[in-house]
Image (cartoon, rainbow, N blue to C red):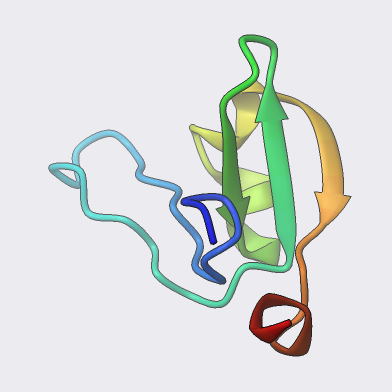
Amino acid sequence: MTYATDGKCHNSNPGTYSHECGKPAQWIGTSASGWRSGYCVKCRATGSEARQCVKWEPAPTQSDRAA
């Protein structure tokens, strides 16, 4: 399991003092530099860190992560 596939949304908006969303991630976003992280539906649409992503793929399901 990696930071990107731990099942949590890791978006952190400015002014939140690095507080991450933490909701279940439905998407994995990849930035131009190759950094991958999980995002919930809301943060994918409106999150400041999510805006940096250039590639999106569905996040693994809980059963995928257990395998």
